[in-house]
Image (cartoon, rainbow, N blue to C red; front, top):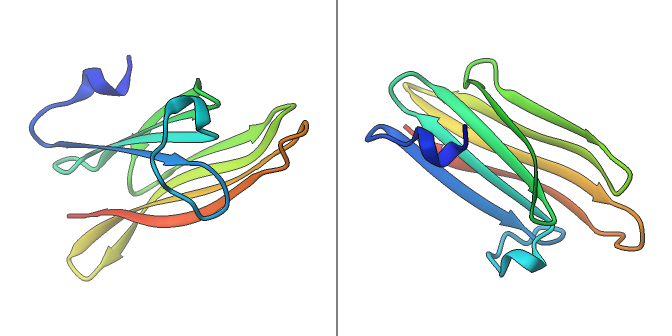
Length: 120
């Protein structure tokens, strides 16, 4: 089941596109190195993570924010990990995304970024 099918009034869908080192600008899909789509259920803290490389969905993971989600990549053209996790900030919960991916096979690009996506 895709992430878009899971939407309801208490879910937040957060798409992010990473092009190269520290560049989170949204561009045309054909220029995209890594696309990460995240959903967060702010009532239950259920989370989902969908990762695409060069426009191809690699994996979809579902879990909870307390335990977090980690996708390890060890492919011919790409290696690294994508991590979704929560941090407590007083009574609020923060949702964080960390992308640490390196590309090979003539591209020699990397994405190393950690960002706060949401506070609830």
